[in-house]
Length: 141
Ligand SMILES: [Zn+2]
Ligand SMILES: [Zn+2]
Image (cartoon, rainbow, N blue to C red):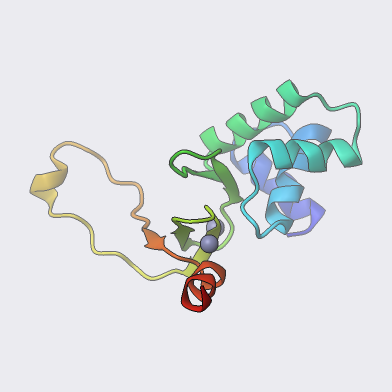
């Protein structure tokens, strides 16, 4: 995503394009590692040392609420964040907590009677297990 596209996506989410917000969004669209909020703050702070931790975290929350960024909850560990560019599912490693992308495919919607009056926006899957590194470690050890 280029600068103009990032700016447009912020505006489409109803957010003003402040330099700090832009920096958070730009980092997330580039970073494929699903960083934690702390890692995002470090990266943004490296570019613009004036941005405070509170501002970064607030911007992150705004981006999640606007539907531009996805929060991937990892039990017992800090949540990871991901720009919603291409749709994809996630794989979370039980051992190291690594979050990886799984190519998107459509998931069958639950039966409407199990949804009741809930309104379904999207269906995404989280696969769990051992990542390649941890699986190799287990095989060799
Ligand atoms: Zn792992
Ligand atoms: Zn992802």
